[in-house]
Amino acid sequence: MINSGCLRERRPARRRCARGDELLAQDSRGRRLVMFGGDEVSAIVMDLGSSATKSGYAGEDCPKFVIPSSVGITAGEESAAQEGPPKRTFHVGTNALSVPRAGMTVDGALRDGIVHDWDAAEALMEHSLKNCLGCDPTDHPLLMAEPSFNPTANRLKLTEIAFEKFNVPALFLSKNAVLAGTAEP
View 1 (cartoon, one colour):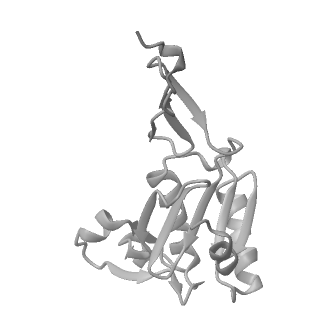
View 2 (cartoon, helix red, strand yellow):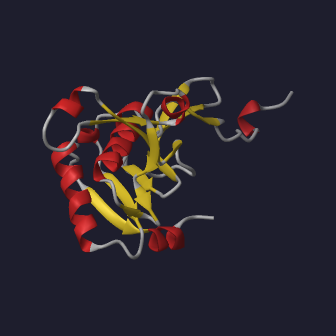
């Protein structure tokens, strides 16, 4: 007869669940355990790139969402009668860009990694935070990647948008080169 107490138990099987910061596991008795990675901060990491915008939670191996940085822009018909700058509507994401609309132009918010259209960049950030990740940005700190040659005025504008529009509790801007150098293989 084999003594089951002497048998070595296997490590719990882990799999990802809907939230990025939780891992579900089962112990040897079949009980479900919830383990949190890191210090349970669940910071959001976002990289606005010239061709793609990547967003996800800190501590994960890869971004949860990668969407094109191209934005569909339509000017409303009522804006033609208004004086001043026209009110623009932004269509963000692969599905929104694939629908043909009258008068829609597709343009990028960034050129060579530098933001040139702040309204479009704000629409990209809002879509990433609220529609893709489905989170309330007031509950999560935000880590933003930026190019090494990003001007100081752009850093200030990005900080203003993060704190005033999205009300993030904390913001950290880091250079792409530093993030690539400290990434785990």
